[in-house]
Length: 182
Image 1 (spheres, one colour):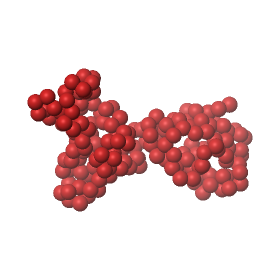
Image 2: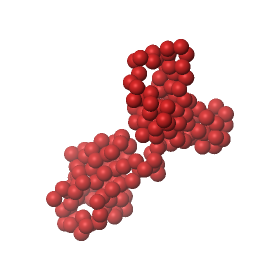
Image 3: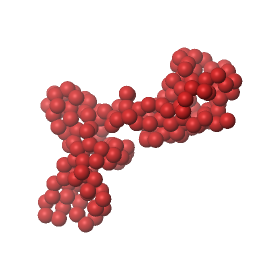
Image 4: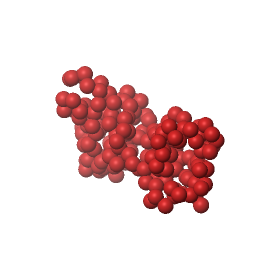
């Protein structure tokens, strides 16, 4: 029987970027936007706050964009300071590249295993699905979900009792499956 595990975000990730005011490097996004109009051209930013000094920085979302080329629902979501939109935009690689930021997901996600009835099975087949593109070490997920230490999970990989079609070392942010033979 295939078990489904889901990696779900619990809050917005920390934005990694240098603060010009205090030289800190961590910002909190709270879902606030600023939209500025200059005649028929719009600029829009996602506002982030420095975790050290509280200074506000702006991440460019739209730059000199003609108002008619913007979907009305997108503009409404920005005016409503939609935190869901902030989460979507932070997932966008183009926005991260343009603003030269990285994301830190530590403490911003949780693993939903659907209960602990799978822990006593001899062979465990699991499908791991990501609700958002959260880079996580598969060994950490497997250890957490199966109640193992990371060293024990790595030992099971070395013995060939924990197998997957994907490489279990490094980080993944896409769906994968694995089989654990106890």
